[in-house]
Length: 115
Image (cartoon, rainbow, N blue to C red; front, side, top):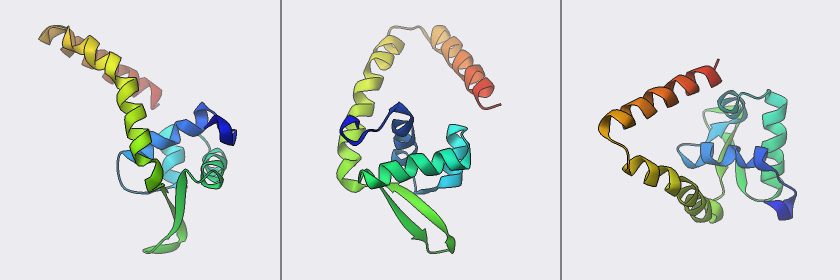
């Protein structure tokens, strides 16, 4: 990422693309809670770096679909696994009640972030 002048903001787009189907720039903006122009700039830089692919939506030619470039999928998956391992280890040590409390707190936090 650094070799291409990309920042953590650019990196925030990638897990969104790893999890499912290609997304529109508008969907990326909504998920990251940024403006459409910001999402477009992020996707443009990632595209120029060859990390994401952009393609015309066959269902609506005015829309562009963004997907993770296949050659980067395995390295991104490995990165996500490395980053989540400490959390998974911490969760293993919690009781069922503690896990439920953690989940309730995390759910409340997500709710606040999405406002």
